[in-house]
Length: 349
Image (cartoon, rainbow, N blue to C red):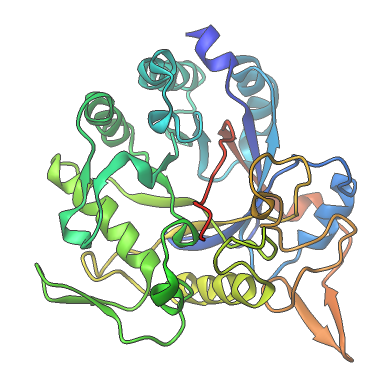
């Protein structure tokens, strides 16, 4: 499966020493831009962040060699590492890539087992909500038939057998409408009732997660954990893109941090907490698609915050980020294999 894995990019995660027991907030450090600051400068901004437990860095390399040369030497510093193979692979039209996904994951797990790392480093694969045929109400969540169903059962079997989570890119931004914007942004709203269960949802993200849980449970894998591998909201978009502005971006990410950090559960699984990664640390000027795709960042490339309230605070009327000297002894490392995919939201007339 070397050919299949070589098409994937590797995602390197830096964890602070802060422990994460099932729930935590991370930030995606995508680098699809030509004007980003040096990584060491970024590390100084994030090293002592009180908000984020982890950071994702994207880097394209060959998986087997990367595991041996980058993970093994740092294994003593590795804490609950995870390798993510691909990004939304099952939603693509590439049948060859879809069919190679689980074998590639099994191959990586075999490599880790040969190095006695299988208990410390898990293998997973982030999927989009597009793998669901139904998601509303959440209790009706179901995976699509055909090739999605064909690969989903072996994928979930692998995750269960290896103790890995099902990772999902959950973006309320791509699903909300004019009358559900407050529901999508965790703002005060009347809630949405699932008439099948009588459960009331106060925000769209919880509904999306429970729809995924329902789909997983329908296949008999409700013991597999769920991780939010990506979620966020853009601050700038094309004129016809609905709900794209600084206020909404700030509110979504700020409220997300509060929601996840509080340990709040979801209606269908009240004892579950989530690990979530905000997309993204920086605006990325090389991203394809609508203008919003290049403006999910919390920071501009010059390290000035796009808005205050998530990683930044206001001091004397000026936005500031806590910048301190990076101390390698306070870091833990995570690793992921990851390939980026475009996200597109329909233009609203």
